[in-house]
Amino acid sequence: MTPLHYEQYSKKLNKTPLIVLHGLFGALDNWKTLCRQWAESIPVIGIDLRNHGQSPHLETMSYEEMANDVFETLDNLGISNPIYILGHSMGGKVAMSMAQMHPDRLKGLIVVDIAPKAYAPHHNDVFEGLNAVNLDTIQSRSEADQMMSSAIEDKMLRGFLLKNLKKEAVGFKWQFNLIALCDKYSDIMAPPVLNESVLMNTLFIDGGASDYITEDDHQLIKDWFPNAEIATISGAGHWVHAQSPDQVLTLVQEFCHE
Image (cartoon, rainbow, N blue to C red; front, side, top):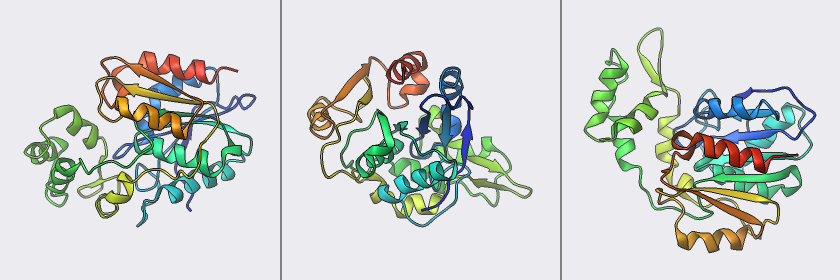
């Protein structure tokens, strides 16, 4: 376990806080705009998961460890009452694991565009593109973008990844721990920690144009989370929060309404 980097968007501690977890290759900054909007009515905390953003770089990436990282961070913040937890993609698996491991510490669970299952490897092009960037020689992000382009054709995806490229006093570095993400990729593709049904109120937000949650997964979700509601946002892909922010904003506000 290790304490994680976080950002508090509201200090209104009289209501149940919402904790927001990003996905693979992401950071809490990806959710900053929505976090600020939610924080107008409830306390919100965004967290960088291990090996991402400004959180510590570690050698392992199991979902049990990542869930315990978040619990330890909450302990350090003095948050002992039940929370709402929202997780996107990999962060959704962390959130599901937290709900299984310590259901008493969660009031509600929101999972964004990920199912409670293992996934086949599908980031080979991303790793190839990232590893093509020579951090010792590049002079600009545009040069890094050019190096990545032969492996990663999607310009928007390259732009998302390049948000993690930070200029140092000398040269550049990736904020995420690329070595650990490569080495432990099979653990990231593994299912969350689940061994029995989780009965808490749960919302799954599904991108209608994404293949991360299929029609066949709906029954799997209901098997593990019998009280789950599945909300499909038509036309949205895997980055539902970036493509349909207003709908995600409203769904989460309604779920966390007290």
